[in-house]
Length: 212
Image (cartoon, rainbow, N blue to C red; front, side, top):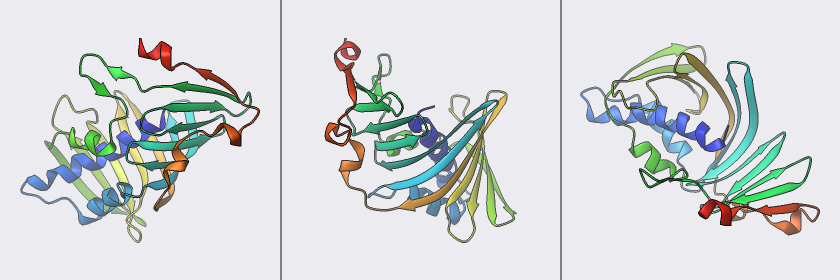
């Protein structure tokens, strides 16, 4: 699963609730603070674990706008806003590619996170209850075309950092745990692959093929 999908799930679920500020009810302030933290202009980082049925992923990511670096047990991925580099840690093979583009909607799959959030419709219902050290926020989108129709978000009461996200995908629930959420000012050097750091890497450039 791409890191981008993880962020869209998290941000879109948060954004569905935040967008309700146009309604009579105001979203919880804690939720707005969590979203602002994840959209920090200088970037942010976090550790994550995803469980979907029998599949499990775990890793660490740094992201800034539409740029990111993701590290997992198997791979390291970089995206600088224009180019992907994916390196298999074991084989040291690096594949270079460009983002895919939706021919019908003419959309870049790596449009900025803010753009992704702005596409979420504001027709939703939400509720918030106390759950131990966290606030548990339940979001239900009323728009039938919404990518996320039902999500549950846990936010730490003391830090306002998201700790868990539960999203319904059809009949299956996806569980995402988050920790070490840290907003900071990250240099763009984090989002590109530098061959000098991996002198034994074998590079496969697939950009020409993807552009056809």
